[in-house]
Each structure stands twice: as C-alpha cells, then as structure tokens.
Amino acid sequence: MTAPIPRDMPDIPAIPGIPVLMPSAVPAAAVMSPVRRPWAALYRLLIAGACAAAVAVEVAIGPPAHVLSHFVVQSNILLALVMLLASRRAWAARRPLPAALTGAALLYVLIGALVHHVLLTRMSPTFSLTGEPGTHTVWQAAARTVLLTAAPVAALLDWLLLTTPDRLHLRQAAPWLLYPLVYLTFILTRGELLLPGTPDRYLYPFLDVVQRGYKHVLGNALLLGLSFYALAVLLVAVDHTRPNPVRRRYRTGFRLRPPVG
Image 1 (cartoon, one colour):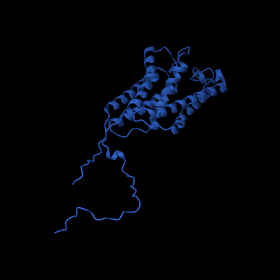
Image 2: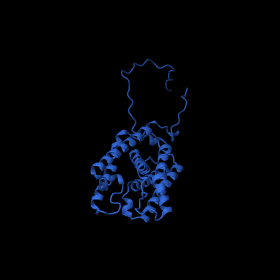
Image 3: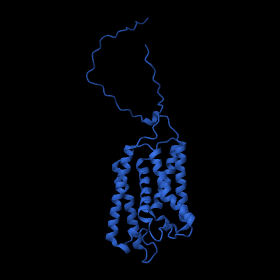
Image 4: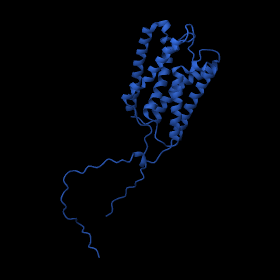
C-alpha cells in the first residue's frame, strides 16, 4: 500500500529568479493543418495563361527579338511564371512564394502599364509592341489590352485580395529598381549597336538619344527612376495598412481539456 497523496502540498521554498521559456524550434507550419486554395490557384493560372497567350500573339505578329525587347513584354513573362508557381503552391497547400519576388513582379507590370498609359497613348503613329501597327488589328488590340491593362489589374487584385499583408519591406524597394536600371542600359546599348536609320532603333521616344541627346534621355531616366521608387514605397505602405483577406482559423491538432479535480 502506498501512502495517500495529501490534499494540501507542504510549503516548498520559492525558486529564485523567473524561469525563462526557451523559444520553440518547431515552425508554425508544423502544427497548422495545410489549407488548399483552389479558387486562388485557378485565378492565378488564368492570369498566367492570359499573359503567355498575349506574349505569344505579339511574337507571332512581329519580329520576336523586337517584341521581346520591350519592358512590358518581359515583365508580363515574369508575371506569368510567378503566377504559375503561385498557383501550384496554392493548389498544393504549400507556403507562398517569397514576397520580394511577387512584389517585384507586381511592380514591374504596373510600371509597364503606367508608362504606356501616361506617356505613350497619345503618340502618333500609335505605339506598337510589334513595330507593325495595323497589320493584325484585332489580335494586336486584344494582346495589348491583356499586357497593358488586364494583366496588371488582375495582378493587383490578386495581391490585394488573395495574399497575406505585411510581408513587403522598405529595404526591398531599392533592389527592385536594379532590373529597370539594367533594362535602361540594355536599351541604350542596343540603340548604339544598331545602324543609324534602323526602324525603332530606340524603342521608346523618351529614350531616343538621336532625337533628344544623352543629357535629356538621362534626365528622363532619372525622373522615371524616382517615380518607380515612389511606386515601390507606395506598395510597401499599402501592404502594411491593408486588411488581411486570407485570415483563417487553423486547427493546431492539440486539444485542450478542462483540468481534472
């Protein structure tokens, strides 16, 4: 026979100091049940397909090297790849893509759309990604609408409504501008290598060194760079203030029971 357990525990001397709980090495994902998001996966897959189809149409109509040299085409290709990967992760209930990658893809398609609608829509003749405006009017109009309007708006809605906020950081804004800087170098180098008189030697009129000179072109590039940085900062600020559209209650797998006795 064992001695009965006393109902009142004897006085035990207090342990000096406050015990410090060690941080758990188990990530939250290990105790949260994965959640598949089929509608988000389908939406992102549609965006990726629309971008890929629009780029394919432009490449089929115009010279591939000329079409693929445009910033808006390159940014939409990046968006299609990002959306394809994000769709797969949403379908398989995996962790989302790094916010720096998705934020960069969104920033670049917004830059392409804003530059076109603000600076290129009133050009005469009409600005064309293929260099041959009017040859396939319906197909060109449809592809241009997808690349310059529908895809950026769809990507913005995906970011606002289907992603977790507070993941972007101000320190990411400056590195995002490295790609536009490299693209500027590419455009100027391409123009120098092409023979004088080549059609569309400089793809954008505000970067045409022959017509405006390097001083004017670099001034335009500086103003555009500052505008792009301001847009990146705006995205970060919005990301830290917008509500969370995907907040869910996760089941941890641990069930608390009322105390015994």
